[in-house]
Image (cartoon, rainbow, N blue to C red; front, side):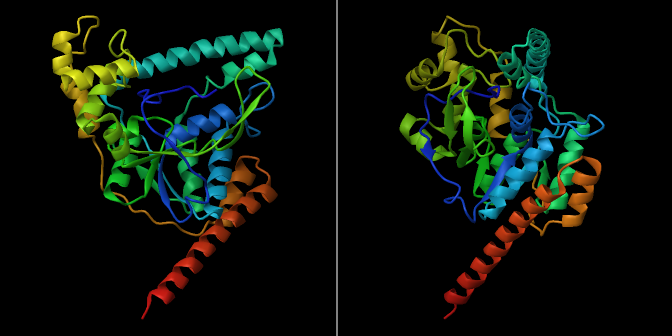
Length: 350
């Protein structure tokens, strides 16, 4: 169970199932924190404990980054990982709420373990993950050794990933959250980091998780909204910058109110059931004019096999054969892409 974050547009937007094969030769900007939280939640032992090295340092996120990135690279998919910078001041309340949820989950996890309720313990364990500075440093170090470009965002990683996609420097932005649409990505892909067979929470049943694409223009067209109105709709539902939203307003009600009144200010004049945030303009600005940078270089390189082995196997107790196999997959994908480009260049010549 991965904790849902961001604005909830799932009931309103059209999603198109896709496959990893369709994504071949595409570049994807990944919200790094979002992906690592997924890995920390999912890659765990039988009782919910994260993977660790001999010194007790958590390695679940490194395992996810290595194997997922290598598997996608083998299929010709080029990833760019975008890391968060300083969060906007308006996100403080949401960050405090998340910490409280994690603290409560830790207590419930320990209590369930003492009772021997393994399934229950594992469920709560997935909600306890925290990204620490060492883990982020390790992630950047690993990606550098693997030849995968990283971009340091000045603020929200999701906003920066959307910026890369909007500029055309990558084809699509990847995140589990729908906030990327509010930040202006032309395309959003979900489930990229958790593709495959997954157990349903609390049930002895499994479901196949497939990547799905959401296109911003299609969403705006189908809902008959502008992007500015989509942001206003998000504020009504609740975002990371006004987590509570407007009392009693869910996605469908928010859509009706925006279509009837056009702007959040007009909704505020007629809708008396909830308290509206005083800083509507500031929240809008975060989405419509986010703090992003153009100071980055996107270059995919051949992995440093021995350097990666020294780090993961020598320092973090990974299996050398498995690491080498993953890196060989990456190299085969890079070579396949280079051969394809050479052929395309040859046949395009007169």
